[in-house]
Length: 220
Image 1 (tube, rainbow, N blue to C red):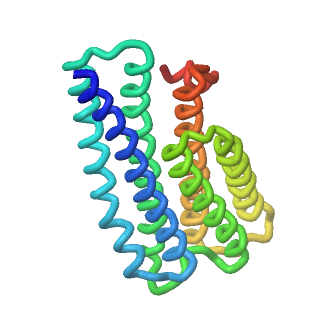
Image 2: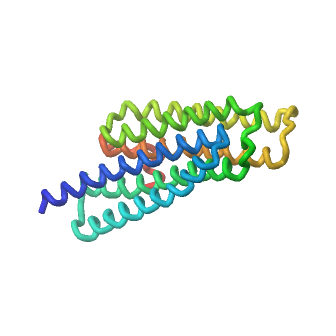
């Protein structure tokens, strides 16, 4: 029985990695679609988000079955509950990538990001892709040294998000009302993407070390 349970726990971890890879591809493609006004790529991201949602539902159902049937305690319970939390977080990250793609699709054939902010959003895209890639690697090998890198890129995303507000409110902004809304939303989507990646990183750190951060204590 224990061998079967261990195999199920291992499968949960592998499924989280697969889900994270899908999110990584989504945010990468969404950013490219945004910067290049690629309609087909934007639509593929939007369509693929349904697959990420399905992965979350399947993973969560199996976690609930494990809780009901195995009644895990101690480390095993921590693994199952963390898997539930992380699958939900990864699903939200997929949603944020979809939102970016929807903005790109909505402005086609034009670029959603005005030229004065194209460099800022290119940096946001690069940071989000790094965050997603490192999150996948962290879930795969649990090298908690990566958690610090994820938080550093999240800090960068926060700073770039602030830069978009500075541009909008600095008195020299000449964008249309629609561009103003798009920039505001896109900045928020990328900023939240980083926040969710940090949540995953802290959850993995908790699994490895058994130490709760203030953020995890508040959400427990």
